[in-house]
Length: 140
Image 1 (cartoon, rainbow, N blue to C red):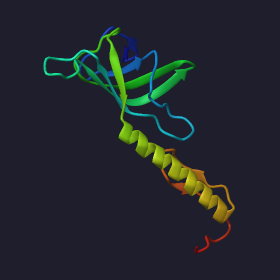
Image 2 (image 1 turned 60 degrees about the vertical axis):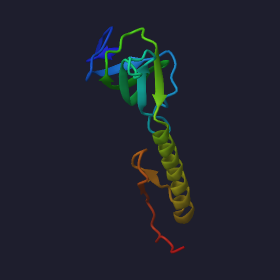
Image 3 (image 1 turned 30 degrees about the horizontal axis):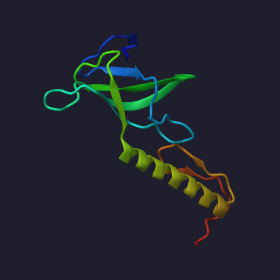
């Protein structure tokens, strides 16, 4: 676990942390599809049945081959290196991102077919497409 660029054994509420897990189900931005978001929380529960600690994952990075970083904020408790944890992807968001990504490809293909140009996307999370074409868009 890393806080403010330094390896630490534990983190506290409000800390911005980077966590490296041995395995993850989180998708890392690639090919125009943005990274997953979600939560990492303790397996151990409080007396109220809530996880002892929880991290909200807002970003995923691959700084080098084989290293996957989950970046986020501690929103409850005090996570410690070596704690057993569960990593949960925000599945409704993932499905929205997947649909948006597919829609962008479909829009790109349609524009290419109609305009015979090479549209390009400005940003992977946006359906905005820039086209360079000398012809008028036909009314179809």
